[in-house]
Image (tube, rainbow, N blue to C red; front, side, top):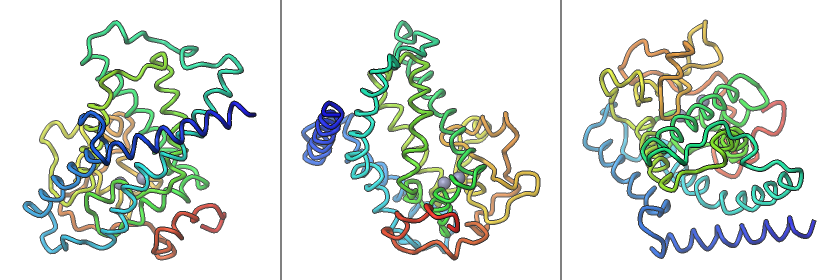
Length: 291
Ligand SMILES: [Zn+2]
Ligand SMILES: [Zn+2]
């Protein structure tokens, strides 16, 4: 037990220090997720202001500040705590002989850097797509995912409005995906992470973008807005357009749905008026069957 607690403590302190060092610019710029997230947010927000899709939407739209807070909470405050938990769990599994190497199906380390990153990006995106589908499919998970779907006016910051439990749901499949690669996170994985943050921000932004024929590969604001649609088609009543960075999975598995692109559809879900308004109450939402 002692070693688990010790591992938790070390990881907790390390992540805390790393976050603090990031804020103070004491880490290499390309691994600085704190200011990286800040700069990407400013750029996408600027584009929303310059080229708005819904012209009458306020720059400080409904729940703007709530979402801005979520962004930093989910990215930093929560990760400080959870990294320690995962570290302790890793040691627990290693005690049973289960390590990141035990499931490896391909050795990507012999590929060139860009191929490594591409494989990492595609695999991680697919497992997240799959996780997202399950969040919609099972009521016990949907209760938490409702927080993300409680967005009524869409803007870039809504990207990271999600219940802290989602971090926990996404993690096992992400770890599994990385295990298939032999526990290998490419050295330059930060490139993939920054691309994913940018695409995620754009997907939620008030900008009309579809990337032309590339819309069949990359998720985009027009497609993702329909993921948040209040009214879903009968044949896909559990949801549509589950894509994270890539849209291709939805086209392959026939969960794609973009009937028009006015950008003015109603967002939310049938009993969304029951969602508490503030962050604290939303943190505790989802644990009761009635939620
Ligand atoms: Zn969803
Ligand atoms: Zn979304």
